[in-house]
Amino acid sequence: MFLARKLILVLVILTALGGSAAYFVTRMGLTGSAEQGRYLGWTVFALLTFLSLLLAVLIWRNLSSSLRQICTQLKHFESDDEIGMIMIDERDELAELVDAVNHYLTRIESKFRQDRILQKELEIQARVAEAERRQREAVIFSISQAVLVTDKYDELILANQSAEKLYQFDLDSSYRKSIDQVIHDDELVELIRQTRRQKNTRVTEMFERVDPQRKKNLSLEVFLSCVLDCQDEILGVVVVIHDVTAEKEIARMKDDFVNSVSHEFKTPLASISACAEMLEDDEAADKQSRHELNSIIREQAQRLNRLVDNILNLSRIESGMFKANKKNLNLTDLVRQVISAMRLQAAEKNITIEQEINCTEPLIFADPDMIHQALMNLLSNAIKYSRPGQSVSVVLSQKDDQHVLLQVNDNGAGIPAENLDQIFEKFYRVRQNRDLAGGTGLGLHLVRKIIETVHDGRINVTSQPGKGSNFFVCLPLCRQLELVAR
Image (cartoon, rainbow, N blue to C red; front, side, top):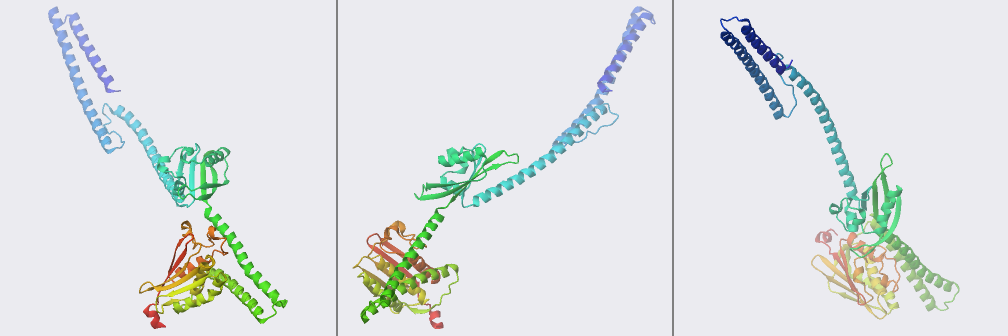
C-alpha cells in the first residue's frame, strides 16, 4: 500500500476517534457540567489531532529521506551516463514504487543495449560502405578514360578528372545537378537518358568532337551501362568515354606507312626490272650504256637496302635487342664519306652539297654504321625537299670541350611551326610536303633513336616554310679514359 493512502487512512482514523471521543464525553455527561464535558471532549480531539499531525510529520520525514536517496542515485546515473537500479530498503514506504520503477528501468536498459548494439553494427556497416565507396572512387579517379556516373534522376554524382577536363566542369560545384546542366552535349545527354529509360546494360557509340582547349578533332568511343539492383530497379548510369583519337591516328599512319613502303619498294624495283630487261634484250649495245644500266641497278638496290635497314634497325632499337658496336670514330671522315655517297642523288636534282669543317679531328665514341645511317637520312631529306638548283650544306664544329655539333642545312620547302614537334614521331610526314617527295615517315624517327637513345646525344630542328630547315645534331666527344682504353 502506498504511503499516501496509509497516511490518509491514519489521519481519518485518528480524527474520527478524536471526534467520537469528544462527542461521547459530551453526550454521556461524564463530567460535572455540560461546559466541562465540552471542554474535555475538545481537549481529547485536539490531542488526537496533534498526535495525528505528529505521526504525519514523522512519516513525511521518512518519505523525504527516501526521496533524497532516490534523487542522489538518479543524479549519479546521470553523471555516469548510464541506467542502473535504484537501491532502497525493502521495508521503506516507497519500496513498492521503487520496484515498479526498477522494473521499468530494466526494460529501458535492455532496449538501450539492443539499440547500442544496433548502432555499432550500423556504424561498422557505414564505415565499410564508406571504405568501399572511397575504393570505388579511387579506382574511377585512376582511370585515364573519362568517367561519368549519374543516378536514377539523371543527376551527376561522380566524375573523374579526365571527365572534368574533357567537358570543362568542376565536380564539387556540379554535384547532384542535372546532367544537362553540366554536360553541354545534347547528343550525349539524350543517350544517357535513353540508356536509363530502356535499362540498357551495354551501349557503345562513336562521337566526333572538337577539343575546346587544343581546337583539335577528337574521336570519342562512349560506353554506357545502366546499373540495376537485385530487384531490377534503376540505380543510375555509368558512362566511360575513351579518347581513340591517337589510336585512329596511329592506324591511319600505319596505313600511310604501308602505302608509302609499297611505293618506295615499287619505284626502285621497277627501275631495276626495266634495266635488267634492257640488259637481257641486248638493248645496251655499247659498254657505256651497259655501265649506266648497271649503275642504275646498283643505285636502286642501295636505295632498297637503306629502306630495309631503316625498318630493321628501328625495330631492333625499340625492342631493346640492338647492340651497338661502338668504337672511337673520326666524325670528319664519316661526314666526308656520307657526302660522297650522296653526291649522285644530289646531282640528279642539280643540287650542290657544301661542307664546312670547323674543328680538328673530332673523335666520338659511336657505332659507325648507325651514325652513317643517321647522317645519310638527314642529308637525303635535305636533298629531297630542296628544289633543283639549290644547295645543301653540312657544317661540323666543336660546340664545347665535351660536345661536337653537326648541322645539316637546306633552303627547301621548310616545315610549318605547328608540325615541328611531330616530325620525329613514327610514320609522321608533313602533309604540305608529301607531294615533293616520297617516304615512309620512319627516317627522322630512326635518326632521333640513333642519336638520343643509342649515343646519348641531342637533335633539334629550326625551320621556316619556304626558307628551308636546319637540323642540329649534338654528340659527346670521346672521354680521356676511352681514348686511353683504346
